[in-house]
Amino acid sequence: MNVIVCIKQVPNTTQVRINPETNTLIREGVESVINPFDMYAIEEGIRLKEKLGGKVTVLTMGPPQAEEALKEAISLGCDEAVLLTDRNFAGSDTWATSYVLSQAVKKIGDYHIILCGKQASDGDTAQVGPGISTHLNIPQVTYVKKIEEINDKKARVERMTEEGFEIIETPVPCLFTVVKEINEPRLPSLKGKMRAKKAEIRKMTAEDLNCDFDKIGLDGSPTRVVKIFTPPARKGGEILKGDIQEIVERLAKELKGEI
Image 1 (cartoon, rainbow, N blue to C red):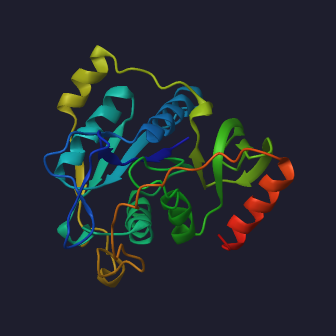
Image 2: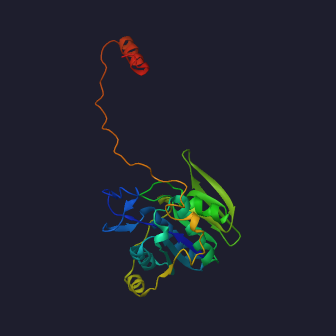
Image 3: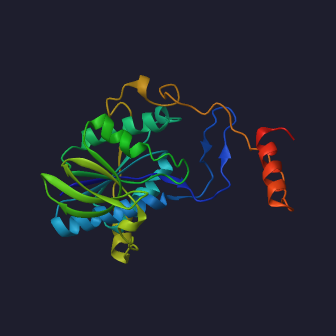
């Protein structure tokens, strides 16, 4: 069972800074960590390998410093790591990012399952995982909380919904985005840390991936942030007191804008 886990390195702070010219996050000089939701995807990939054999390849797109996140994933038990790094990727939105990642998946090949965290803590869009499956034209199941059965032909999973859960069966290869209820991520072992220090990270550029340059980076992104601003502070509310009928009439006028 060969698994590809897509992860993202995110700022380890809520005090993010924005580049006023590009309206993108400034990542230089900011402590970064593996996106917390992606830790569950890494753990699930390792568990599948331990149960069914095969290997786990961890994949990320980012600046050179993202190599640290990949080495952490190796220390946890992943076998191989690929870093997609190129200035041409800078400013990519979720669609362009998922396109680049899908190109890398095609290059890696020989996989059964792609795992992603349900969303990134810095963007919170939950769009990249589904975007990858769309570019690859493979089935996807989002918000997976349990993989009940899986082989090289099909998978059966439990998916969280607002009302409860669904049992879904899908052909393999496919992509899952997972939620934190799926497992409890492990800590790296000493042996794993030593292995990570010696690990060679495979680096790939847009040219290596045969990317269409019209589909990557800021210029190749169909969406972009036009303006960033802090919303005005909310004004204090008013507690209405008195006769219930008077309160209802007053509230109705407030809602109609008559007061």
